[in-house]
Length: 105
Image (spheres, rainbow, N blue to C red):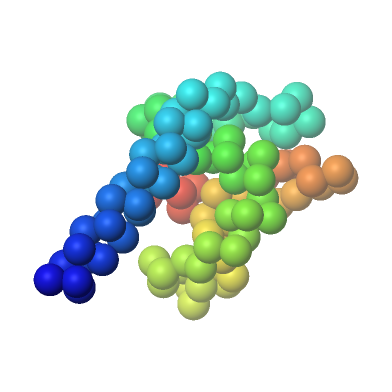
């Protein structure tokens, strides 16, 4: 009985944390800084969540770079992290100069 109570408490705690984090991201207004190249047509024609993910990758590249990519593009395209699926190249001041279409697929 103690294990069940502990497990339920743990699940409830995780649910609260996820709910709190999710609302913050949903309320954030996603927009690209002017330093980045505009999103290409293949991104703009995608669902809003895909567009937001591209913008998030541009805004927080060091965070997205910590997420491993498991789609197999590491072998074929040389991707090292999930960031490589969205951003092809950075210029000065971490400005996106080239987007990658892998994030749409």
